[in-house]
Image (spheres, rainbow, N blue to C red):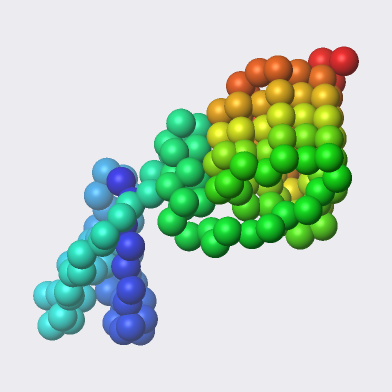
Length: 167
């Protein structure tokens, strides 16, 4: 479960947390922030809620890619990318200092800084910064930062600092 709190009375929160620690008040064996907030309420703090229009889940590969696609359509303005012998199919977000050539990128692709993509097709995917993709066909994939992938047609979830060479 995920929550979002904006607490202006930070000193009061610290005092409330100190109180639950001094009383050794634990919930499921741990000191919980919500217990500290309950102490604040008992001491007169006013708590308000507010509506959230959208909540974007990124807890699995599937939901991360779905969220990426929604945000690309919603937030990223159209941009004219120019890379040699490359077709860009919006929406995409390509960070600075990327070197892309002889490739097809998009739709729904995010690429991090300083990433190299050559002779590849990438769609519905996220590629981290400082990664290198060569001679690959990627769809519905998450490639972490500082990763290297050469020669593959696959759907992947590749973690940070990983290198795979199918060549």
